[in-house]
Amino acid sequence: EGVGVQEYTGIKLKVLEWPEKAKKLIPSSLDGANVYFVAATLRPETMYGQTCCFVSPKIKYGIFKATEGEYLFLSDRSARNLGFQGLFPGWGPLEKVAEILGSEVIGTVINAPLSVHKTVRILPMETVKATKGTGVVTSVPSDSPDDYATVTDLAKKADYYGIEKSWAELEIIPIISTPKYGDLVAPTLVQKLKINSPKDAKLPEAKEEAYKEGFYHGTMMVGEHKGRPVSEAKELVRESLIASGDAFAYAE
Ligand code: A2H
Image (tube, rainbow, N blue to C red; front, side):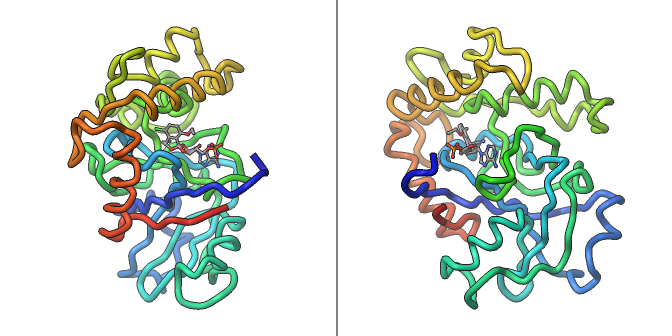
């Protein structure tokens, strides 16, 4: 990290319904416009398995104008970065139209592109870093140990987190099959390494192992590229998400 450039995919999750607490923070100029949470991912081929989308309750986010009638929910830091990549009209930081704390958008109903679960919720993740990506992380608990550890914890302590338990318990669908860890890589690794919290020190190791096994030895189990190696499907899924307008490529 800190060396070289990461090629991220920004996944656009369209807002279908804001929670009551967020409604009063959204300016009326956005009535009728589309607002998207932008999740930064390095694994676009896993988007079939999204079950929710995370923000940090403590991070300050903004809603920024991308084009006419299209607005993006992301961190201030990423709005500054994205404004210089020629993705949207104009040059320079995107125009901010609202300021919102992550905790205020928990429960937002959004559309998850490509996912078997079309409609998911925004949920809290305390380990989201303000210094990386967009500060929004879409959750794929089948293949990301961090995401699996977080949804497990959210379901266990739903009251503490102020969410409905059912929001964190969408079915975890197998999307990638591997020789070593079967077709649910993240849950298998989390159990094997006896990880029992989203802050467990063994998570980086699990994440590294899940990534290697999935990318080099995984086979797609769903979607247009079912049966193809993950190493080939990754770029193809990314291109089709971009072509359909559900994602954009960016660097940081
Ligand atoms: B990945 P790297 Cl299925 N804070 O997407 C914490 N984590 C963040 C983040 C932030 N601000 N921004 C992005 N991320 C996550 C999918 C996925 C990811 C799977 C498996 C592994 C995986 C679904 N979540 O990441 O430190 C995002 O989660 C492990 C490589 O720059 C993003 O890709 O390598 C990844 O971390 C980028 O982390």
